[in-house]
Image (cartoon, rainbow, N blue to C red; front, side, top):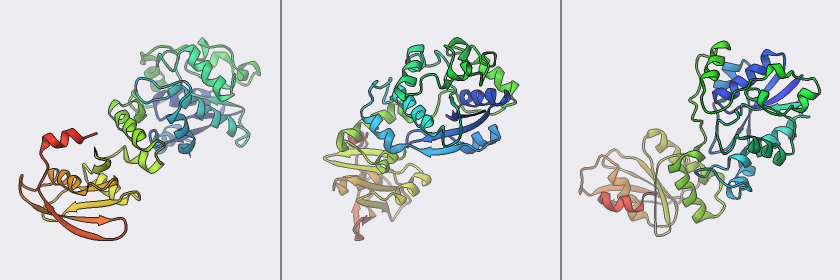
Length: 318
């Protein structure tokens, strides 16, 4: 018997998969990826001993993110509709992988808004997968599923874990020999208050942002003034990502002193952006320095200026 499992990168999904594997079910772990949520599939493959398949669902998820039928959580996280999308995608893949049902690591009551009994049932209904989702960690507390009724799995394989305490998950981890696992907080950026603030800003100015614009929200310092949205890198990794971006109008960096890379994505307010960049360089305060400016059209020029005051910078920081 074969099943597909939603691999989230956390301990719960690892345990759910291990439980089914230990009872003879062949499990194919699948990780659905967006710019906001990208589990470490190499880690998962190592722990599980089987490859985790990564599938990008960004375009479909953007529609869910911009208009979630069940609304958002505390921040910009449309958890119920996100889960429903992933389960629907997994259901559509069952025939392709010759699998019969879907496994998730959801725990009843672990997240009060999105993992209560109503929410778990609503996710299945919205996904058109009623009765096909097995939740091994809490299955003993939930109604029988089609796999149970068909005899594909046994109820005694399922656990009765509920609530936010994770002591039983840690015990199971020891039982299955899992010595390293990700933190319980999860890795979805949409649950982060600061990231959600940036996301609301971006949707506000763009309506339906592109994938590349969403990805920029993950890095750098962000600023907005008079129709201009620009970013300043915080370290060499981010500087490199900004340099490799394909959606900038202007790119700029210091010449006389070490400093970060900056890009303007929207607008033309290059002088202000340059003065913010200088503030984060190694240039002495109030010392005019040169900055090289590249335009996406291929032109380039040198601009000399001094840093903007910290108070003014804070007014335009996103």
